Length: 399
Image (cartoon, rainbow, N blue to C red; front, side, top):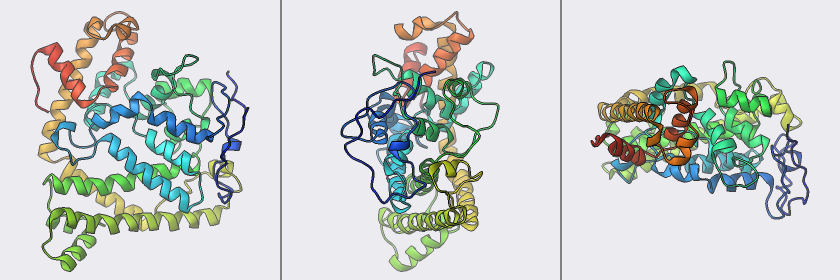
């Protein structure tokens, strides 16, 4: 097994001296799978962040669906803008909690790299199409992207991220239990990620920043798209009180201003509750080092019980009023058809793939070919998937 790199040069810029004892420190990193000299100007986690930002997979997020298909409007979030919002929230939380801001940011920027075109609908379709070949999981594919599919270095595949960044990417939602997705199981056999434990606090914070970002920006996008009205939202859990207060205080104001008056205090309430609850758990657990966070046996970052209940109820409102709205469902059902059609066509005839991808295939319909086709489709943007469908089937599908 390759050994983690030592700190050959030592970073010129050290992290803040006032980081908490349980924060993740660059000097204590378990290194990279393939040894590299350290940077003279950046810590190892700053390099992780930069490698993610400069990756092809990160650039493709700008044309991947969050809820709305990319071409439906300029106002709506894409996977890229969502990832940037998550990173901003995570970095702010990490600063307040005296954690490693760079690692929290890197994990946040990478957390959605593995998503297919057309959001969760595309993932469901690709998972169904590949069921007999192990299915599809976006977290597993994100790991595959940063360890295998990105080709930027002559010496190795992937981005060669630190152990802590890879752990956070795979485990940011908590410990993993068998059966494991194939890409995660195979990498863990090569370089164990301690899948049964909780990750460091920076990864836990990134996962919660994801929740904070998407419930707030989905309220924004849903109102702008007319999927529900301010009066509908007035009856929603958690957000309803902020809508009532804003309407009472501001009267009949334009929608964009009303959204700001609702989202801003809602986001603040979530952040303040998360900060207070996390500090309470840390005071009770008193982890002495980052290793103590992993050994704690439960999440140390989290919302209070009441806020967690309120967030779950707000997510249920958004599920029924937004994600299951007939307009969204029509689009997503059409998108599922596109993904299913592409998988079937490429599997039957790998020559339809670009030459380098076709060369990696086995026989039509076998497991090796299915794996190549799965990776190829997962990397597509919404618009490229539609273009490929038109190229192969000579018909345009409205999504």
